Length: 620
Image 1 (tube, one colour):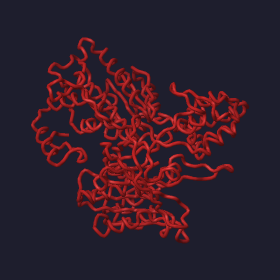
Image 2 (cartoon, helix red, strand yellow):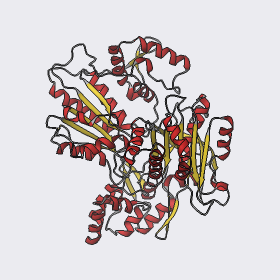
Image 3 (cartoon, rainbow, N blue to C red):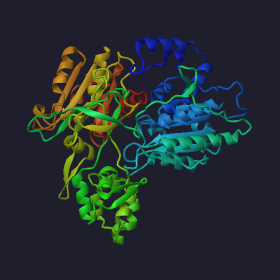
Image 4 (cartoon, rainbow, N blue to C red):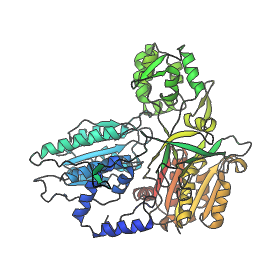
């Protein structure tokens, strides 16, 4: 990236400010740009928007010091990211190494040439885990390579791994564990024990970065580490003051007000889908199409009451959590993860199970990835307590329950079209399992509790792997059945507001045309005004044979392939287990058919789309 083509976020800068910044940056030398990146890095913890700007400023591999450290080897930082968190951490480490005079290279696993591994002297890996233990798409090829027979011995490589994950998933941080174990098996020298970071990854990541810097510095102890000083700003009277700014995040959420809630399904539908509009007024929060919003919700009282009654516990029992007393009822309602079963919870729970045969059965489940995935699907904590009775005290159970986490929803609006608002599309989750009704924690909280005027705590989470093309002239193909339509409403609104000339093609599917055509009038308006070029729908329950979005894709195979050949970007949002896999396979079939390619060549064609960022998924 050159200084001349840095893309500035329109949500942060006015057109005049963009012009001024671009003009200033173009005057800087490479060395000046590097110094500026290091300086801004020192401010990042006090201003999240500034961090977003840092990530758009080019930092090359050369040292910013006038006297490079003698005899140093280049350091490679690899990141494999889905939402962008791994990239942020890797970028932070990279910039701190650069600022201290080391030669460092920041590499996306998606672009990294595996053959280079044997040349690496220093290798730091930051990688997330996708779904139930799989590598994120960007890390798939490198993950496969190091686990294959062509992987080289790495006797001269020193390495460390930071694994990002979510403890609510059974295979917590599995991809990071895979990289760590395999690099060790290839005889690389581990300089630090692997660090595993949960969704609140920042503190763990910062500690890991500091440990890495210390280890690197030990190898070049003759050169002192340059320390960063807190940035200060001059006040109006000339006195230096430390800059502070309110930055809302997962740990410091914004208290927002519900503006509107509308059920989108018609009378007689088997579904309940809600469009919710939330005010961001006075928050300073910004987002881009493709980002997600995190909502802090509470467990349903009926689940809490039922679980407490099942164990014959007193709901007024006092539980101390982080030095704060809660009644058992309030702890279960507000602080405990009750509707999601994690591998870490099951592992801890085994010690309390009454029957050794039950304990052995659960151990076997934990040892089989597929069986574990099937076991946790659709079950909650109460189900585990019923299936595997245990002599566990209320205090012990509370100690092994994971903390209740916010629920993330794809943003269904463009902030250009709805200033100081964020919209989401939510389907109520409600099903029966073993004679008991189970309810999704967030969707039912939204459906039953959140009404206009009510408040909810939220934060914005960036999703860099689900972005509109930089060029407004690039065609876009979007596949989003059900609530998977949400981010594409944001995409089309954004392109409409910015006057993007690129064509937009939407595939949408649901059960019935008459009751489940989400945002129907809006799509009709977008088609009429030209913001939506084409739309194909698939309503699976309206005919004798079920028709899904992948069938509509196949029906328009020739035109779809033509769009791809003309540079279109392809997006999928929705169910990961079935729909997304079917859509990808259908696209491979279309490429093979229309491109007259072999199956292997068609698979590679789609793989190249992924590598180039032209095939992107937001799946769950």
